[in-house]
Length: 350
Image (cartoon, rainbow, N blue to C red; front, side):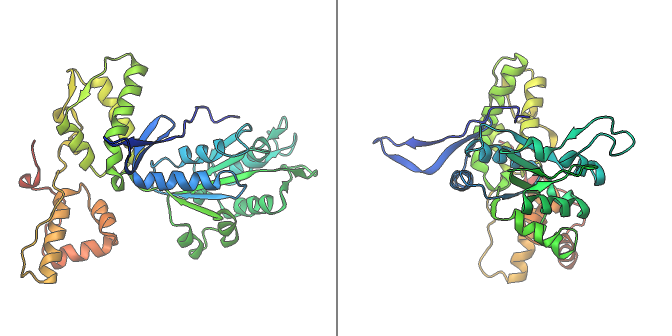
């Protein structure tokens, strides 16, 4: 079982006029997606340093940031690259079904077991096993995974023979696993077994300099895929894309560009061609506060502006690093509108 797509991993430094390097910002290509971002260069640097080892890796980050792409990079930069990269999404299977998928079964282990099934742990022998959304794994299955990692062996369901395996495990989650441990939804011993190396992948809104080059890359990709003529994004459209908060991250950006390639009629892709929620986003990047304001007045103004700029209260709370309940309490205390609406004056039409 292979990864399915080639993954090209490289960095590039831009040259200044005198032939020197222009700075730390580089280009990172992962599975065809170009990312121009200092934050992603830090991720790449960490990946390149830990990939040659056999240490287990825990990838964290919001849904859609590209955790599987990074997992594949770890595999392809490791000595295990010639063996299988085996991904499995723990959220799509539950209970005994997930256990069966991971460890397999012997013929006759249960009523419908007409033949032996080889599990993912066996398939990933001497390769890499990627457990996506590992937080969705049940406690019983967690115990079996922990045992297999500690002993490097397991038994198929209904079997008596111990099967030795050499597997490098990369796990991914979009939730706080430490909080899940405290809530007793995730085993503490398994958490520490997985969290040998922790790599956090930042959301797209924190690496906005990546949006334009990624947009152009996806434009080329989907134009070729669908046999469409290559259109050009206007500067205004790229600006609006850069200021949109992208709650779905890279996955959402990719889907938006694919849709635009298919439905746009003109030679250019402008602001009016963008989805309504992206067209409506404000391109304001500064909040100006007059001297003499009290701290409470300043906080009220910041909240008012954020509520105008960001599309949802959830996004406002996330950017401000506060809970939704806290945000609602502040909105009520300051008498701000309870409905999330942008004022038309805050939207810049270019």
